[in-house]
Amino acid sequence: MTIWDEQSLARLCSEHDRKAEEELYTRYAGRLYALCLRYSNNPDDAKDLMQDALIKALNSIETFKYRGNGSLYAWIKRITVNMAINKVTRQKLHFIPFDAFRMDRADDTDDDSAGMVPEEVLLKMISELSPMKRAVFNMFCIDGYSHSEIAQELGITENGSASILSKAKTQLKKQIKDYIKQSEKP
Image (cartoon, rainbow, N blue to C red; front, side, top):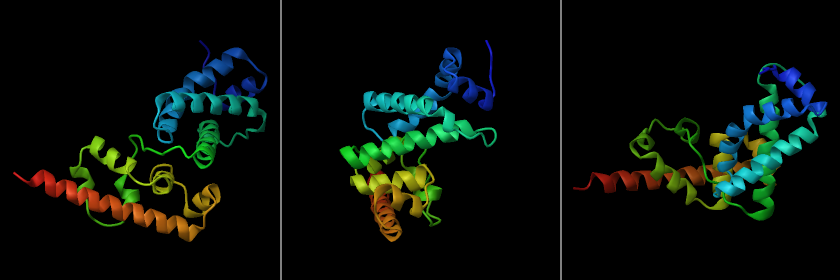
């Protein structure tokens, strides 16, 4: 079994080397599938999106520019996220976060109350946000997009992105506080 570095793997894939293409799939499919689950509430849709993104990456691999270790995955991840966003904006799919929810990006306060809520309950709360709030929340808090990038991808203004994120965070804070109050009742 040959293990290629990213630069060699990309070069061989651009030459349509079947073993290299299989290696690319094996190496990245799991992480890309998890990423796709954040943008689709259906595992079959997530798998289709992941496969479409890998096909698109392989079809355009000759445009990849190696910039160091991790750059191939970053390039494929960007293709995948862009395809997911296009599906959301065109087909109105709903975002649901996966296991990468981080309150440190989502909440600027010192309130650590999200840690008192079970993950599945927190994910349900996030899934109840409106589609646009979920999209902005997911892109900013999980995928690390800036408001400028979110605005460009979703066709809104930067201030609109910041406002939508603020509303999503306010809604989540209220839901978290309500959950904690409810769970403290005897």
